[in-house]
Image (cartoon, rainbow, N blue to C red):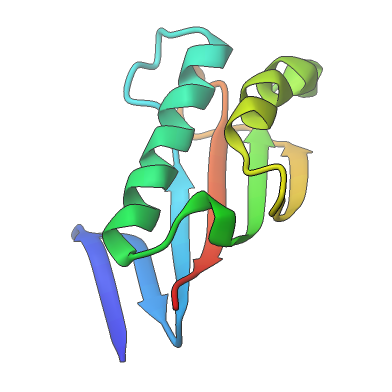
Length: 115
């Protein structure tokens, strides 16, 4: 069975299938916020989608991070490291990539599971 969360005309913010939840690219609502605050907002959205699907950050399988300025890597990681479940860290990739809006400082996708 497939279940979609926060369905829009172009995409769903998350899709659950076969016990896995696939979370679409999440960006901050406040595009003028600092990198650290944008990172907190993105992780908060991931938390909310995982919770809505019955999962949690301890059940993350992978996270992909997109930064338009790879020089922000350490600052983003300071927020990410404080958020992630250290007993259950997911696989992760981080790449430098131009984002859809020049004011966006970070975007993340994630895959988790529910039981």
